[in-house]
Image (tube, rainbow over the protein chains, first blue to last red):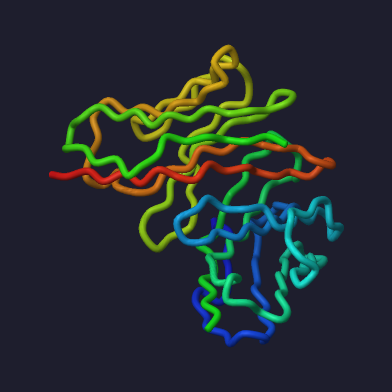
Length: 114
Length: 114
């Protein structure tokens, strides 16, 4: 079975631009979460979506937004990119999105802002 | 909110050595605890988990026991291999506002020399 898949795997953007990252969860999983991992640090929670509704949001500015589609795939959008947004963006899925459900991560999308 | 403190790295060992990576946590309630591993250039892979006190998670020769009395979840392996070289992250669930959120430690880089 396919795991969590993300695209693109690598991309380079210029300051001020916009980026869209995409994620497909494991088949049957209804919860998708997004994390940002800056080089040398642990991942930081950005959003969780379950059944197309935002269930939680981390301490990130409004430039970050996301949505979940009827097929449970998800997009993360970041506007007005800053150099500090350069990071690995990880998508994760779980079966029902409750604490205790195992969370599975994708390979990530490496974003470089220049 | 909940938090995790991990043993600082990097850690360098010889093949077949005994490994311990310390992890302590601060939490309200009864979080689930996880160890994730990240190989170079890749996303996070779940290594093991424990969902209640005194549970022992194990996988691929790695073990960790959920110790509520010492708020710890130390990772151990009896005989490490070169292929175990990676960054290891301790994490716990932080069910803020009903969201399924993982809080990660800063990671411990492990290098195993032949």
